[in-house]
Amino acid sequence: INILDEDAKLKNDEFIKDYQQGQLDFNQYTTFALKAYIGKTRDEISEIIFPFVEKIIGPMINIFALKLLHDHYDKGDEILLASATNELIVRPIAQRLEIKNIISTNVEFKNGQCTGEFICPSALGAGKLELVKKWMESNQYDDFSGVTFYSDSINDLPLLEVVEFPKAVNPDSKLSIISQDRAWEIINLPII
Picture 1 (cartoon, rainbow, N blue to C red):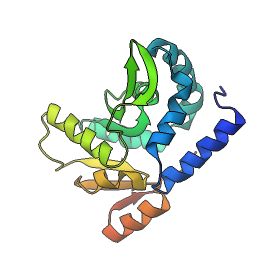
Picture 2 (picture 1 turned 90 degrees about the horizontal axis):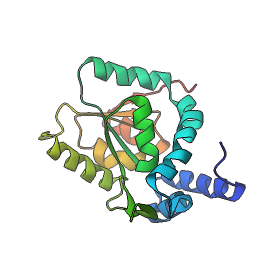
Picture 3 (picture 1 turned 90 degrees about the vertical axis):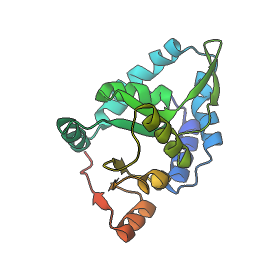
Picture 4 (picture 1 turned 180 degrees about the horizontal axis):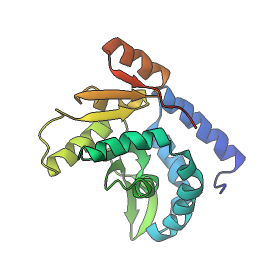
């Protein structure tokens, strides 16, 4: 499935580089990422997204990451998928992984149609921490003791700093340096 033309692929690559450097302009990125969905209903968007998740994202799911996930399930842990990506993509991925709790950037719909805007806060950086705290309050969690959070991105530093067990998984260069300095566990999963 090819949903991006060559210019869009190049622009997307630029946004990925900015994200990896912790310098993403989230408003610009969201305008870009949601542009194709403006005026579409959730059902129309699902018809585009679900095949994309099956054919493109599904094969990218790392079996070693799935092992970490299943280890938490085996211990009876509550699993929360927290991603800066918009809900249109995150929800089908969570369904594929059988994760019922998600935090993502929520997309605005008016009269049943996507506006191309997101609902503040985004689930990036401090916004992700804010949304996780709201989820915790509504699910009777008082604090971050006993909480493990896995991330590969410097953008997740606000959340990594408050959990009891921060874990950097195949971290970007900035997160790798901070993780080493703070003696956080670094997990290097094989890329398959």
